[in-house]
Length: 147
Image (tube, rainbow, N blue to C red; front, side, top):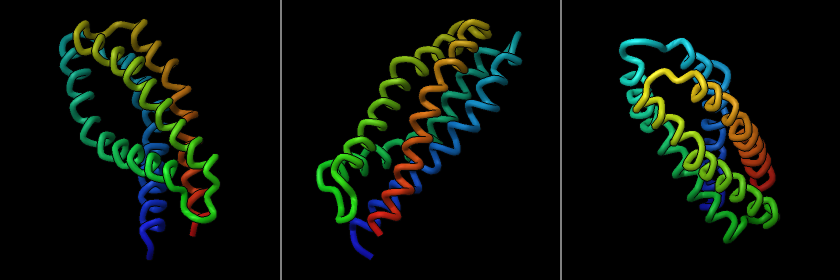
């Protein structure tokens, strides 16, 4: 097994995990925020952030690191354009997370149940869901093409 094989496998695992996770979050978890009202709603939002970080940060870091390495030096069988698109998808996901989802989670943690913030969280997460789905599909294709 080569270093390139390991990179492509790490990317497929990280992107696949995030693709599955984002669909669960989009379809199940974020809509359930609308039902968390009253006492404890701020604590719930804060605990959600804390626990979610432990799950997503390792996968996101691996995904970003590997996407960067692959864009710099794509393995045989992987067009540079595909690797650059993969890195671009990661950057878009990170930008959305930092600029949109994290501030909305922060608002829920500070203010508790805010229906407009919950609706914005669900609505604004659709592009991120599409981006991570594209990432997962691209990572699977790259694993096959580079292997």
